[in-house]
Amino acid sequence: MTDFSPCVSGSECLLRMYEEHHEIEDYQKGVPRWCTGCGDNAILTAVQRLCRDENLVPEKTLFVSGIGCSSRLPHYMNTYGFHGIHGRAFPIAEGAKLARPDLNVFVSTGDGDCCSIGAGHWIHAVRYNMDMTVMMHDNNIYGLTKKQASPTSPIGLRTSTTPRGSYLEALNPLTVTLGITNVSFVAQAVDWIPEVLYQIVSAAFHHKGFSFIRILQRCPEWLPGQMDPWMHDPQRVLLLHHGDGIQISASLARTYTKMDEHDPADLVRAREVAACVDPVPVGILYKNHEVPCYEDLRYDSRVLRTARLVQEGLEAEFDKFTVWPDEMAPA
Ligand SMILES: Cc1ncc(C[n+]2csc(CCOP(=O)(O)OP(=O)(O)O)c2C)c(N)n1
Ligand code: SF4
Ligand SMILES: [Mg+2]
Image 1 (cartoon, protein in one colour):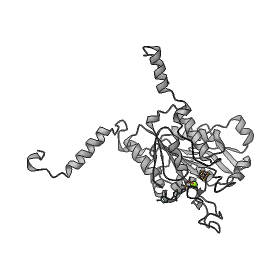
Image 2 (cartoon, rainbow, N blue to C red):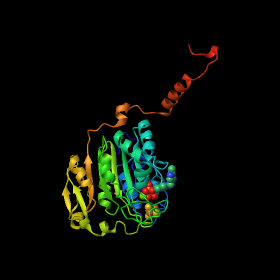
Image 3 (tube, rainbow, N blue to C red):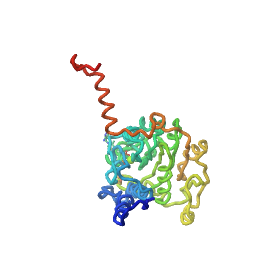
């Protein structure tokens, strides 16, 4: 909240308000290049709203991504951003968080980026449990590279790499994440229910630890109609609600009548719910505040890795390998 008490003049108050209070436009940048109807637009809107509602300082906020349509998200945030390399969003985000634990770190990754090339990093990132909000945009396909099968493509899906239909059962990112040591937050959202998507992104942001959200995301360009069965039939969506999870508004309850009270502290039940694909469970599956964050184990998080500290550390390391002329050698 803005503190006006020490202001010496009205103009200073106004200046302070201008500096400290942010509108949604303050987080918006450029015009998204995603296709019309792409679910990535809804995800972008949800995080921009969250930044506005939490009044996040843009200079203390970082969006990291890998490669893919979904990974373009940092370009549209007026914060710091790192459009990384394919499958490597997690190690980049982890490095940033370790060096600068004061930053709000968000990650956007695709189903290919996270579950194919980045799968090794995904497993270890869950185990390291560093404090960041992860949005896995799952459109069941490689969108950017024009319709190759991804690990989450359903069996039988015809793609450019599986013209006769994919042969394997889809990987379930929720059950995988829930099986990894130190898992601390897992949720599922869908791009077409913005009210719940927003609540989940907000809960993930407030959870201290690695908050993994799988978001079912429409790709009308390569898989038109892929999510229609769930989007057009509210009976095929199971809303998970709880005092420590998401709240269902009266208007939402009128449309989505299939609901379950699910306690996010119950890991065994979370794994059962996560295995269900129809109806698709939407809500917070698991939350555990007790898992330590790697950055807290490694460092006193109050010590910021400032440019000066980093430079001193690097110089000390280089000095170990310096061959000094005799007269200059340190005593
Ligand atoms: C090392 C490497 N391998 C392959 C690629 C090509 N490539 C770019 S994006 C992509 C898949 C993207 O799919 P996904 O992560 O699901 O993102 P989407 O485009 O669907 O949002 C691939 C294979 C690459 N850029 N780098
Ligand atoms: S190709 Fe698919 S995922 Fe990529 S921008 Fe278009 S609709 Fe979105
Ligand atoms: Mg994809």
